[in-house]
Image (cartoon, rainbow, N blue to C red):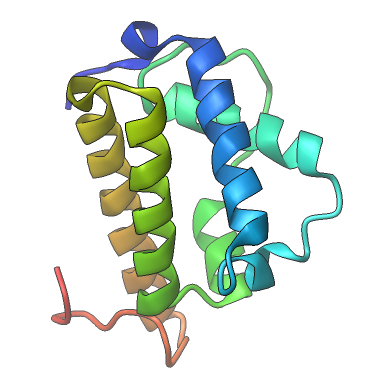
Length: 134
């Protein structure tokens, strides 16, 4: 996949992340697993850096990401991922033209699928199962 961080810009990545988590906190189902977040500014800065580097940007924080274990720990499920992706797609569409929103969304969807597989292998009965949805 083409790196698109520079095309999007750090300020826009930050804005997408902040807007998305505002929407998450108001969402009837997504707000539940995210209720454990105690420091929203810190969480958003952490996630903005994750996305920036995932989209091809240079690291500017010394952060260790535990994406898989964190999501298994909170109980990622097919239904939660569907809700998350729908909300993320809507947020991206409000901030970016399709030629930048689509590849960012594709990365998010691929990460989500890998998290479901990890949850299934970790014994989460609600996570996606290998051979299930692709």
